[in-house]
Length: 135
Ligand code: CO
Image 1 (cartoon, rainbow, N blue to C red):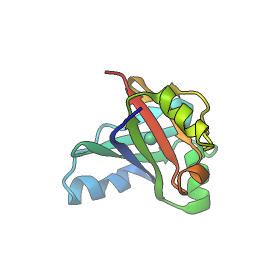
Image 2 (cartoon, rainbow, N blue to C red):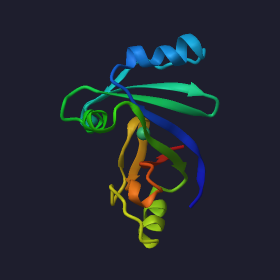
Image 3 (tube, helix red, strand yellow):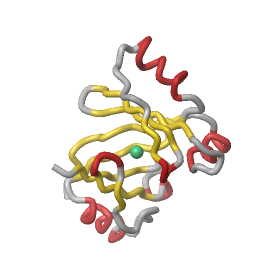
Image 4 (cartoon, helix red, strand yellow):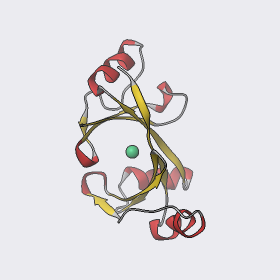
């Protein structure tokens, strides 16, 4: 199993249109068109930043996990996503080291990826996503 790169850094925001102004208007980066992910009840945009991306997450419903995060902690860093070459091997390596996975098995993410989240208590307090990108 190998980690290939930092796939994205995700930031929870109340308002994507407002939040992306920093990246587009001031920092001169390009944001994707907003995409609604129904299963997660979020609206997202991806901002390309060299070989990685910033993902902005805005809740589309009061019962979305992002809405709960915003209520508890306010806007801010939500998770990091490491791109790995083998998601199942990564989950096994985490479990074998006694670390807690939120997703015990990989599930489909955006754009044909397979993803799994680790529990922040097992990753130094940072919610961590692993993603295998189909090549
Ligand atoms: Co993510």
